[in-house]
Length: 415
Ligand code: UD1
Ligand code: MG
Image (cartoon, rainbow, N blue to C red; front, top):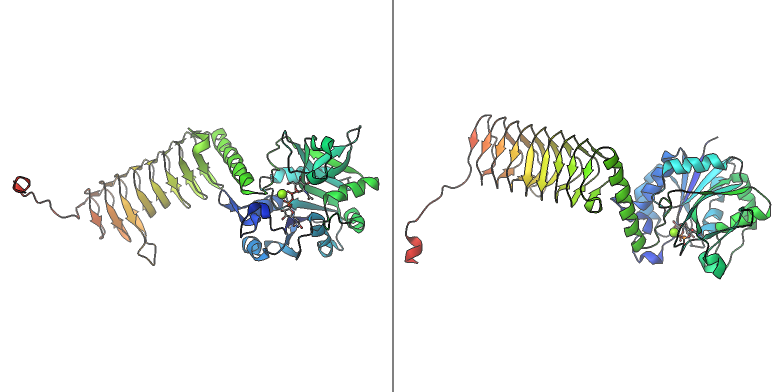
């Protein structure tokens, strides 16, 4: 029996005040919906359908044909999104994971745990304790601690508003029981709430269970840009913590931005205000920053130094090479033990194409050099400061490409 999942992404949230669906806004370079989808997929759910609404093309552009799509033309609530999913559920047995498309920090391992716990239940859902539960549905339990219902904030009485256990919007339902409960789902103020399914199932005396998460940040939802900023901060700290545990020194956790899919070796030091984009590999004992911008596709061997205000992109850099300050090195391969002087840039773009710069081992590039790509500096070359290099430099050569200085003696006295 294959596991199936439904991601809800049909609403066009006015709280976001955006022309785009909130689900395609990015968190550290990756769309919210992409993050949710990847976690569901990594949890082992093979068949996934995504509920989309008015902004369906935007979501399709991100998830392409990795998911089926269910079209919800009018936003009549999360319960309505499930009513629209009836056809997808038809003829299937076992369990279905249903997840809000706006909870991007959910871990695959948590989804797996939920699915395991769900085995015997009609409904199982994730909850967490928030000291400030404002905006979330509250989990109402009876005197024995059993779940009774989820009450949306707008329907909470004063006592219920004080409840700190909140609904995550991540549920695992028995498909047959869900299909039956859907028959009884009615609208309130023209809206259908998925949360009412819990109450319906409890009234039918079916087994419903809530699983309280220890890490309550995992299920934070993104309903507006203020929450988006909060989640960015939390994700940043999670990623930085992971690297520090792996032996990387990060001097200033708050001002270091490391994207997903970055590998950093032991005893590398990251100075403040450094951004490292996705698909970057950094070796052991490197020194990066301050104020460095390491863009996609860089691969740094051990003991590389990337200093203050240096930007590199698709740069493959050999062991012990230093780019200490104020440089842009893009689309390049630099050998071992090179020194790239202050202000050196690769001129890698001619307005149409990107071209490569190749620099051999033990090469010294003086300050303020322009390397006009495509160009190649051999091993053991020396480039004089201020040069604009347009031709390849053979190994062991000195290249000077600048005008000679003229001194006009006494000129300034006469003027
Ligand atoms: C929802 C839950 C709330 C929970 C919170 C957790 C309901 C009624 N409330 O509230 O209990 O604490 O999430 O974050 O479910 N969607 C559709 N179609 C619709 C409406 C919504 O697909 O007609 C999708 C949205 O795109 C979104 C998700 O469902 O990704 C949740 O909707 P949202 O409006 O964010 O609900 P919350 O107010 O956050
Ligand atoms: Mg939400």
